[in-house]
Image (spheres, rainbow, N blue to C red):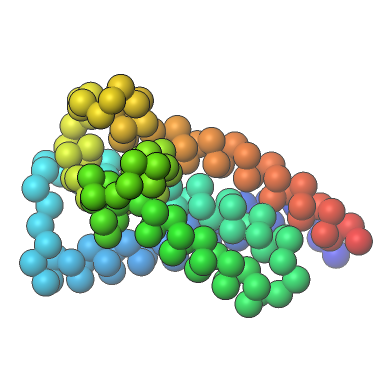
Length: 171
């Protein structure tokens, strides 16, 4: 057996998952362009927007790696992951504007990370100027909030995944 770092195994899997995500985003963008979606910013902002999507996806990937260590089967991880993603998506503003939600649901939606990443308002990708939303930092600076949420998830999930992997492989 070749001595291999446990973190290296997880990093390799994580990079392979990221490559799959990049391909999926490219296919999604090409499909969108084919059916009429257009980017209404300059090239640099468009690339930054796609980079933000990929950063958020990478952060979620760490959480899924942890789930993979906790659940006993691939089906369990997949089912929980779909449930989690649907929950994050439906509580965000991806389908329903927060203005029409009850106050508590709207407040929770505005603080939830996917709201920042898939919000209905494309303005945060164009510019990151504060907007009037009751003074809440996460709402005023959507791009910054998404970066902070994503980096926070990476800082928590990456070492946790390595620790769970060590525990699981040492048994």
